[in-house]
Image (cartoon, rainbow over all chains, first blue to last red; front, side, top):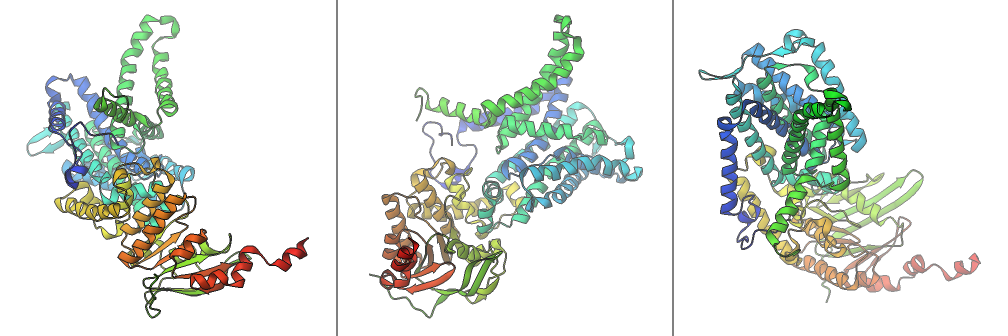
Length: 354
Length: 268
């Protein structure tokens, strides 16, 4: 627990459980939101695209954080649950002409249902074995989607959908989609932060730390382990729905094991068990990815003898994998912990410790 | 001065319970009653079946035969998590906390069954969710006062020392507002001061909250001092039951703990 800024203390329990405590924090928070939502006015469109994808990824990774970090149930199928959401949204939009404000939540529910089904074994199996169960979801998902009648999910060809419409306005440009996706991201983050300070969040954390004792305290393990998967994949499903409207084309191959593993990597880099960590980890790894994408060709030109562009692109995975390993060795608590340490030392400055 | 216990008010009754793991009989036909407002200690040498018996009460083990009734209701077969809402609180042998959570959250998690927020309400954090949190926080703060843990309420439990962790364990069990409290070795591994504190807390709980306590403990001094009644187990059998002063002089108990003089001779 980081110390509070000097002079700030709780006079009642409401203050003690609030996330934002001081006027300065409020100003920073609102300024941050304003900058994010003013983005389309000064970011170039390539940057907007990066932020949109990052926002979608943040939702999926925060969901994974709820399943893995908060409840301790390993999930290697987050990408499949995201795909389930994307396909549910796409098919509802393409075949039933549902508006986006119905089809995206429906995508969330679709993801949650699939997640809950694959979460049921969590009552009996733990750790490594549970990872394999969720891996099964990831492997089964493309088979399931491509083998269904092509009228439902488009079969192997995938499914295209019309742009989202609200009233007479079409959400087709990056700018308009930016507002939709950032808006949903902010709402989902608000939900996630609230969850961690509620009865349900505590029950989930209790299951993570000691499931036998949690049961003695009256936590129904079956309900809460399944709920952990359902909430986590609800987030994935919403992310998938947004993904469907952003790319307007969904294919089973977009939701592969590779992304699921990356999402886990983002949690590790950000800090297992912290919602803030999920955000930081996603932003950090996405930024690194983009940086390598930009720097790769440049390196290729400067050092042509090193093997040209192709090598630098394939080098990306080595760099990103290396970053995850470095975090596991040197900062297993992740960026969120670093951030807390930084805040702490800033607040007690000039003293080295309190 | 220990008060007289009304034997008419039975809280928990164990009737001819037996439990075996394979061929090993762990608990053999054990019957006992816990009366309202008493501290019943269960003692016995290592491997006597004390913890197994408690695990039958908590529901981790299903007895092979026999009945456990609690306030007139049979609870032998009901699921573990439903026993909490009946009012059966429990503390654990060793450290069984939620180390990744703060002290406040550990104790608040004890109030799980008394709160109502579901996950959709938790997402939105409606005003009444907030009010519920505050109301329960007030009760938790009373427990924190009672167990003198004000200074550590925001610490992660994983960072606390052993004695304090045992206190958090007790606080969490109390937060459930139990109608009966089962304590498995609350003083194991504590130093003298921590033991005295814990003994004081146990007596206070029994006195102020007037709930019966089942205590399993190896420290004989403590057991003799604070128990109203003692039951002695050996190899799964009840070998003695009675007031502390009766148990102290009971030859069967002395034999179980120290062995028989004649037997000793035969060994060599």
